[in-house]
Length: 188
Image 1 (cartoon, rainbow, N blue to C red):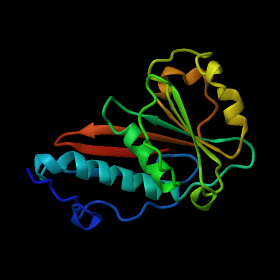
Image 2: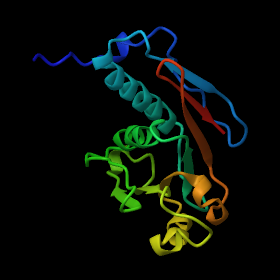
Image 3: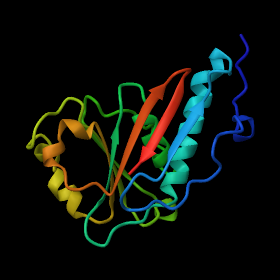
């Protein structure tokens, strides 16, 4: 069986945005909707994944380290909404070549970032809080120390599970699945 060709950005639907404006520090600025229901089933997941990671790359280009604490980005949304896929796009943009998988069972993965592509960050910290609960759940991961390092970029999935333990997030991203295999992404 022949592999389906990879769909590139030139094959995405016309209504996919080409750019993301600079992100404000507060307030929702945009909701992006991607509709892939008209594409063939074999390409659906591939194209959806590529579009989501492309959106993550555009978002990443707007980031820079804070002067005081780590940059904390929370990713919320139902199972399968694309939180880990978004993180993969951020990681690739920052030069991570390791396989990026969900840390659901290990809870946390830390990636050292190459200086040439890091945008000033030294580490990408990916935390999946799905199996955690409560105010002290992040303590064994050394979360307080991670947050104090301004060169860390922390992406935390399922923030609602550990909300009491979190400082104010630099960016809050919500992903959702709509009708016809759409993905809505909102930033705050």
